[in-house]
Structure formats: C-alpha cells, structure tokens
Amino acid sequence: MIKVVRGNPTPEELAAALAVVRARAAATAAAGAEGAPAIPEAWSAPSRIAHARHPAPGPRSWARTYWPA
Image 1 (tube, one colour):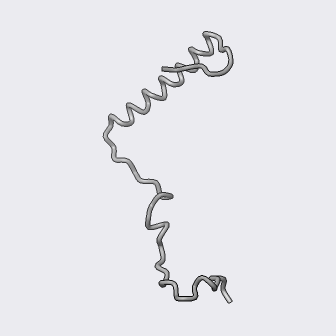
Image 2 (cartoon, helix red, strand yellow; image 1 turned 180 degrees about the horizontal axis):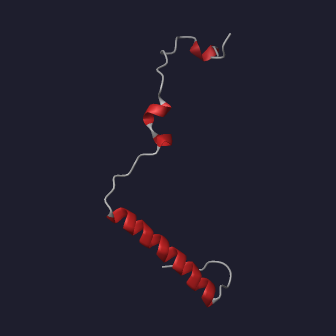
Image 3 (cartoon, one colour; image 1 turned 180 degrees about the vertical axis):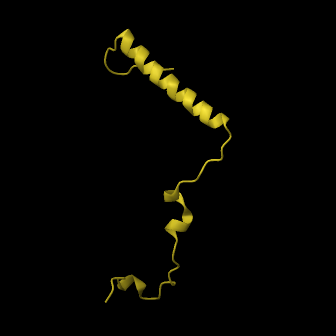
C-alpha cells in the first residue's frame, strides 16, 4: 500500500511513482529468483574490525594514553 502523507499529487504523478516502485520490486524479485549467493560486504567483515590483537591492559592503563612517544 502506498500512502501520500504530504502534498497533493496529480494522478499522473502517482502513476509515475507507482511505476517506479513496481519496476524496482520486479527487479528485486528477479534478482532473488536467480538463486545467486549473496556476497558479503567488505565493510561489515569482522576481520576488518579486529585485524590486530592488542595486549591486555595493565593495572595503570587508565592513566596512560596510547599516543606514540
């Protein structure tokens, strides 16, 4: 269901918007029907986030900064 929440579109504008939405839905359905496995995005890879292992903090680590000397 599509709901207009602001403005007063003409019937032609509504038809154009509906055509875009239906075309996008058809393209998505066609892409999903092929059964191709989804490739994970590189930005969400856990190996990118935790690429290096840092030592455990010491007893006074709260008082030090990790800026190079």
